[in-house]
Each structure stands twice: as C-alpha cells, then as structure tokens.
Image (cartoon, rainbow, N blue to C red):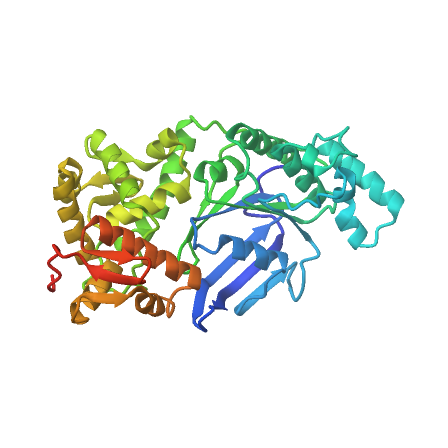
Length: 439
C-alpha cells in the first residue's frame, strides 16, 4: 500500500478535543488539551509520547470507548456517539479469553456482529492463516508464546476488516526479537493488495518503532496531552535503522520531545508550585548513573545513542533526563544532553559532598522538596505529618500520582539529609544536621 498521507480520504477526525477526569478527591485532572487530528486512508500513524501524554486516551476516543469532555470525534464525517463501527483494537496485554481456542477467540467479534457460524469459521481461518498461525486453530492461549498470542490479537482485529486498525503499545510486552519480527510482518502485511484495513494508528513511546512503521508521527507533549509536532516519514519501506536519514529523523523527534517538555522544568522560579513542576519519576541513583554516563562521554551525549546502548526506551530515559535538568545538573539541547558545572561537581564529589550539592539544588529547584522544607520550618518542632503533605498534593494530582510524588520527595530529601520519614509514626522530621532556614 502506498503512502497517501496528503490525499487519502479522511476517516477520523478529532476536533478541538479536551479531556478531563474527576479524581478521587473531586479535583479535575486534565488529560488532553485542544487536540486536533485527522486519520486518512492509506497511512500508518504513530501517536508518540511518554507517560502522561494522553496517547492511549486518544486511541480510546477514536475507538468510541470514551467521549470527550469537549470537542467532537467524527468517523467518516459523522459525529461518533458510540463504539466506532469501523475500528478494531489490538491491546498490549493480548486480552485473549483463556478458555477459548485460537479460532474461537478470533471469531468473537464476528459473533458479536451476528455473523452466521459458517461465515465466521471461514473468515476466522483466513485471518489465522494471514498472520501465520495456521495449524494452531484449536490451541489455547496458555499453549502459545507471547508473540503467538499477539498474532491472535492481530487476527481477531483483522477478521473484522476494519477501516481503522488501532494498536495500543502492541509490541511492548514482547521480547526484542519477537517484537522486531512482528513489526516487520505488520509492514509486509500492510504492503499487500488485499490487506483488509485502510488505516493503522499505533500508540507507542518507542521513537525508533514510530519511525520504522509510520507514514506520519504525531508527537505529543505531556501534562496535559497536546500535539506538539507532526513529522511526515517519506522514507521507503523497509526502513534501515542505520541509514543516515533514519537516524536523523530519530534525532529530530528526540529533539522535539526533550526540547519542548524539559523547557518547563529546566529553570523553575522560586514561586513555582509542586503542581506546576512535579518531581520526575527518577531515583537519585538513576540520576547519578545518567550523569556518570554523560561525564564519561566528555560531558555531552546524544540521547538516542544512550538509549540504544542501554536498551532503554523513551519512558525509561526521559524521567532521568527531566530530573537532572530540573536539578540543574544537565542542559538539554535538542537531542543532546550537556553536563553543567554543578553536574560535573556532583559527579566528581565524594559521597558527603555530593549529598550537600544535591541538597542545595533540590531546595532551590524542586518545588515539592522546597515545600516540605518550608512546612518543617513553620511547624515549630521541625516535624510534620506526611498525610498533611499528601492531602495538599491530592488537590492537584490523582491519588496514585500524589503518593508517588510524596515517595519521591521523601527519597530525595533523605538522600540529601534534609529530612527523614518514620513509617511507624507517619511523620517527616528535619535531619538534625540540616540547616533548614530559608535558602
């Protein structure tokens, strides 16, 4: 199938979509902000972003499993008011019925549509053969490898002959070689004349996967999710990951993701709140390890190269980069990270000196750590209940995110010897050696 990004018929439109949910404490959690997107016949589109970018929410809006808070979702020009009749989903978790055989799993959607048994059987067998599982019709999911189970998921979607094949991180639960094999087979199927779907939309956080598969990569920013760029991939398939054009496009997209999202945390003001600049989900050890890698590369490193060397993906690497940038240890320049003087000092310091540097940077640049220190100063006995901080956080985060923010603040503060946390009493207490007077 040829690339027809520019001229293909519009199958789906997301028009001025805002999406928010109500948290456990009644707060509004904004997931998507002013999203506009078109999906056209003849293209594979990748929705690329890290956690918090709303990419899976967008896929569920397209599938008709969610309704937007505001804006409109359209399928073939008509407002979508229920489940999308022209879409089929492939899930990360396979989502097979363990008590049903391969063939019965593939027939499920057809049965739900009222297709007669004889036709169901014929179409299911054709789909099973198409994805390379001929001979396993009577097998059960427990007898299959992860890759084979995902093939069943593909067959169950393709047997419906949908206009839109929607895939939510379909390869992330598989080992590297199996995932690569299935990506290649998807591209080969897409190239056949009788491929039964007109458009593929895949959610991923793997930049190389997006560039390998897609005709168009929609790059999403986070918190709330929004489209920050659309990159058209004009390279012919199959694509060589080592080709200069491929590497350049991966670098370009890394730059888009890091350059825009880390700007918001690179130099927070003294008045920045823990809601505006949350703590990235990164351990102190992980931050230190990243800085050592950059230091070992003469103080400047290419993010795609680091990710490739460590077998990291975007969601693994970016919180570490965000945390190091927030603390002033790194600068981000497109797809490169550059060690600052304070980052170099931290990397070369002994353990006690590194703790002092971390303490100073965290108090100055991490709003939640600064908030905890301020609460301790104002308490009189330099001790506060952790639940007090948690309650404040739940006013702007979901329950799970609020708890994770508190855990990170405690870990960072403990390392810096600013304060400690007692599990039995549930209290955060200033470290006796810490000078918690206003910085």
